[in-house]
Length: 161
Length: 290
Ligand SMILES: Cc1cc2nc3c(=O)[nH]c(=O)nc-3n(C[C@H](O)[C@H](O)[C@H](O)COP(=O)(O)OP(=O)(O)OC[C@H]3O[C@@H](n4cnc5c(N)ncnc54)[C@H](O)[C@@H]3O)c2cc1C
Ligand code: FES
Image (cartoon, rainbow over all chains, first blue to last red; front, side, top):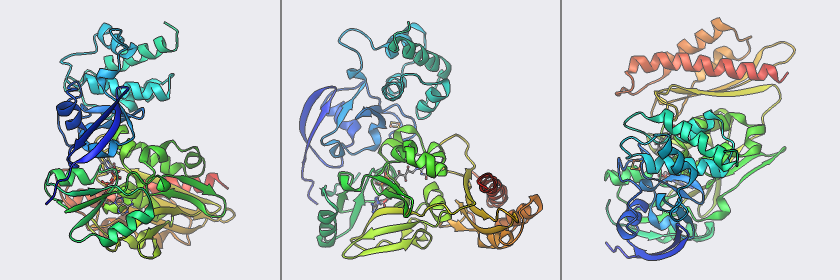
């Protein structure tokens, strides 16, 4: 059977990217293997854990469960695109300073889910935050500090702290 | 995953003509949230994939008082969840989406993909059937089918070769009606171990139930219409005793699978419990409208 390569043109972390991919290639594979953006985790690969979460057009999605060719014309942000140069994003800064990160495996996915939430709603309730993180598993069960760190980041982003 | 030939038409017309002309095993792909799991496991290995995710003309949610709600096949779960008109006119659909999978899956997965997958555990088919919805299909000709008649067997739906589902049509809510959905989950967002969607109308002066449509999930190979239970409710004033009777009937009529989440016996009992819960809530909502 032919496995003709397909053109893929999309934005990743603000830059236009153009490549040719086998249509069965997952977004996760393109990010990690072609673009060497390895901050997005390859974990369960069956849409169960959320470690591969990225933002597509500002919304949280699982890179292990989307064909890369479907990103044509879309904009993807990965964990590598969250900080502003050397300055951490408030979500990252608060997760570090509040000690939310334990082994760190789930962290990039957590940041991406939180980023999507705060893009949509800068004043989330605790419940909104919990819902936004519902699809991100933490093997250390360190959810509370993640939730608190995101609350703190939202305050910073509102200009309150 | 096996290799496949790939095409991504941009319009319904293009997609239909392509689907009609391809030889060999052809599969439509939308968000892939259900399909990629099967493809990764090798349970599905189509020769051709026609990717419809880019057909933006099918991405809409519209409402009119005469026609009710029309949801384009490409509307994502997330779009339905957040739609102001859905929240206002059919809050049950927003509630359903809140418990359907997780944020990330709702971002990319679509209503069309969900209802065409034919999973008897899925939530939207049950709610759409309870609401007397129709599906609009497009192939060489256009066809409208009752959501209820669309489900044939486990993962088998009434789609002919070359057909696409283009729209879900949910009629306006009748006066004095209420609808609710409940499901048994280990964790929020799980597929229901058992679930129930119930629609009832109540006569405001007599309090008598005039219509009932109850659909159970994950208790048969297709969404299960609990007709025996509906029959005992219609024409009577619904109270706890009657609800229990309706629940009992459902627990006898269903034909549930057994798996790690629940034995057959457990699912039968949960069919009773969840039918009662959903119906009681729908009843309460119908009465509040009076
Ligand atoms: C972690 C997780 C949890 C989930 N939990 C739930 C849950 O609680 N409740 C629930 O109901 N679902 C749940 N799902 C299922 C899932 O969300 C939906 O089934 C999914 O959104 C399907 O949409 P899709 O666009 O991704 O379809 P795809 O996976 O692309 O397609 C599914 C099927 O539909 C066909 N198809 C797609 N679109 C069309 C069309 N327009 N016309 C004709 N055929 C078409 C495809 O050929 C395929 O057979 C869950 C999924 C995951 C991964
Ligand atoms: S790796 Fe994608 S959800 Fe686990």
